Image (cartoon, rainbow, N blue to C red; front, side, top):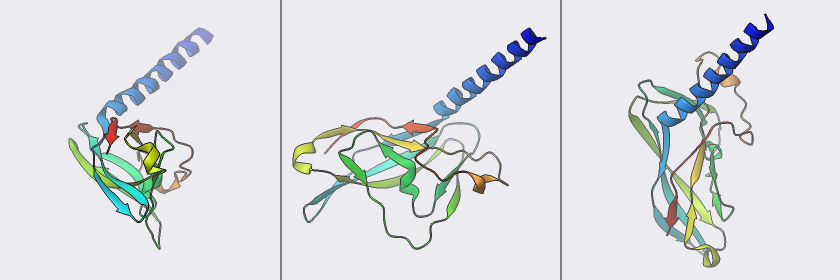
Length: 158
């Protein structure tokens, strides 16, 4: 009996691991070089980030109306993602149809631009999937606990 239970557990966890791997290949984050904006002594890079759904199913995922930038991360401390002003931050249920994509422009502030240009980097997106329409608002909004970060390609700016 213990042997059967052990085999079932191994099969279950193998399937879970494979499902996680398979979903990653269907959700792709791509970044491209953007424009350079100077405001006083500060340098910002406006970087288009495109989330693509290459699966046969609609991608349902969570974001926030104002703090959507919090779902993004960068692989270097030499850049900061800028957040705009907002008066009401609420959860959002977003979707991308099969074989479609959506693009957001991230404003990245370059820390110490005289020292850090040019800079090679990539951007990650914490994809929080929504499987159940009834309970999607109960997800934790603690973006410090990134569980499924999809990393983009690497680019060099400027």
